[in-house]
Length: 60
Image 1 (tube, rainbow, N blue to C red):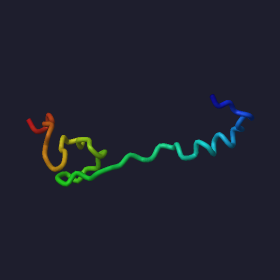
Image 2 (image 1 turned 180 degrees about the horizontal axis):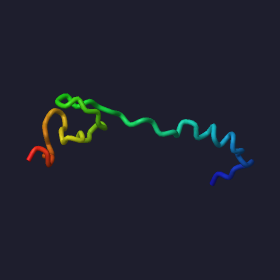
Image 3 (image 1 turned 180 degrees about the vertical axis):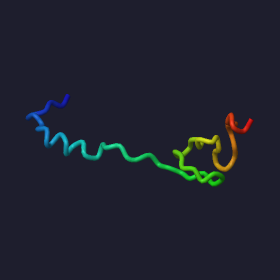
Image 4 (image 1 turned 60 degrees about the vertical axis):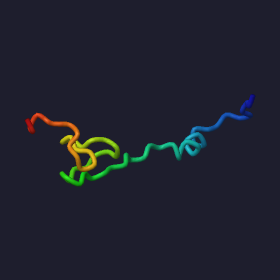
């Protein structure tokens, strides 16, 4: 089992974690409505890949 020889300073710990930051989520534009939504998720109006998959209350 590995045991550290010396304590890692907060500065070095921050440098070690520098690549762990969260990236911005990938966004897509719905071709029908032009709305921006997360990739592989439905748009706020219920469209996914150009087809309406969820009916909203406004459509009824």
